[in-house]
Image 1: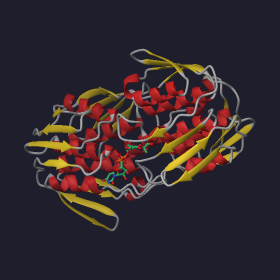
Image 2: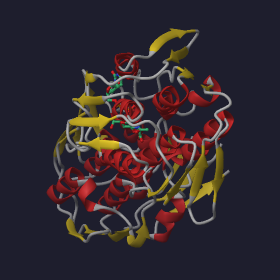
Image 3: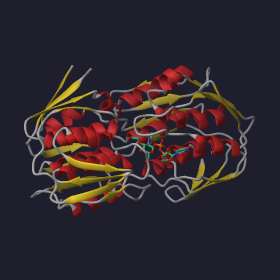
Image 4: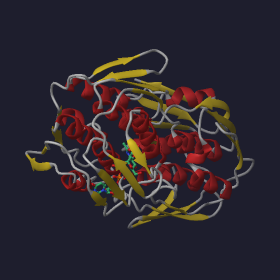
Length: 417
Ligand code: EPZ
C-alpha cells in the first residue's frame, strides 16, 4: 500500500490550481443517465472515485470517453443493465446517486445498499422515502434496493434531515416525473446548485436550487449539454488550512471564494490574512494561528468535510478550541491519530477540546477516511521530523495528486509504494 513520507517544518508558499469538485463531478456523471444524448463535462478531477463511477456507468451500458484535457463525455443511449453491484458500491457510497436517474429513465433499478463507512452508518432512508413519494415501488432485500416505477409522478417532499445526495437523487428523479415536485428542507450546498445548473442546461425546469425549497417541473425528456464542473471548495479549504498551519503564503487559482465563506471566516478568525478575487484566494499566516471554535452544519454553515483540517490547525494554535461535529456520528478518528503526533485533544461525545501545543513530533499515522487523511498530512507538514501516513488510498479518492501540489508549494513530501 502506498504511503506518504513528510519532513515537517517547511512553510507552504507559491501557487497552485484547484481541481474540479469531486462531490459535484460524481452527481453530474449520474445526470448523464437521464438522457440518451451526449453529456460533456469539463474540469473533471482525476480521482479514484471518478474512475469508480466511470466503471459503474460503463457497466450499465453508458459509453464513456475521457480526453486528456480533463474532459469527459457520457452517452447513455442504451442502458443494458440498470444495476449498481455491491463490489463497486461498497468502495464508493456516492453510487447511490444512480438510483434516482435510473428510475426516472428506465423505470427500474437495482442498487446495492451503500453500507456504512468509517465516519458513520450513512443510511439512505430519505432517498428511498422520497422516491416512494414520487411513485416508485421499492423493496430492500439481500442488501440491494430494488426499485420500479412505470412513470414517476410529482410530489411535495419534506425531508426530515438535510441530505446532500438525497436532495440530488430526488432532484434528478423529479426532472422526468409528471407534474411539479417540491423538495422542502433541501440541501443548499454549492454542488447541488452546480447539478441544478447542468440539469437546466439539459432542459430540466428547476427553480430554488441553493435555497431550502427546490421546485422541479417534470419534462418528457432531457437532451445533451456541456457543463464545466465547479471548483472543489473542500480541496481549496484543505490547502488554505495547510498554508495557515505551516505559517505560509499561498495563492489558489481556479477556485470560487463564494463557496466556502464559512471556512474563510474561520481562517481570518485564526489570524490569516486573506485576499480573494473572482477565481483566486491568497492566504498569508504571518504568526502562530489563534485557536478557533468550529461547529459543523449544513451549508452555508461550516462544512463537516473541513472539520478534520481545522482540527489540525487548532492542534498547533495558541489557546484552546472546541470542535463540534453535528453531521456524522463518528468523524473524530483523525483526533486519535493526531495524538500520536503530540496533539492535546480530548473527545467527549460529538465535541473535541483541542489545546494548542507549540510543536508536534513526527510519527507514523494511519488514514481512516478521506478528510481525516488530509488532516494528518497537514499535521505532518507542521510536525518536527518525519511523519509517515499509511493507507493513503483514502486520500487518492478525493484529492488529485495531493503530494505533487504540496511539493509545488515547497512541502518536503514523497509517495512511496
Ligand atoms: C455528502 O454525503 C458528501 N458526499 C459528503 O462528502 C459530505 O460529508 C456530506 O454530503 C455532508 O456535507 C458526496 O456528495 C458524494 P448527507 P451524503 O446525506 O449526501 C443523514 C467527502 O468527504 N442521512 O448530507 O451521504 C446522514 O447519516 C464526503 O467528500 C440520513 O439519516 O451526506 C448524515 O448524518 C464524506 N438518511 C446526514 O444525514 C439519509 O437518507 C447528512 O448526510 C441520508 C442522510
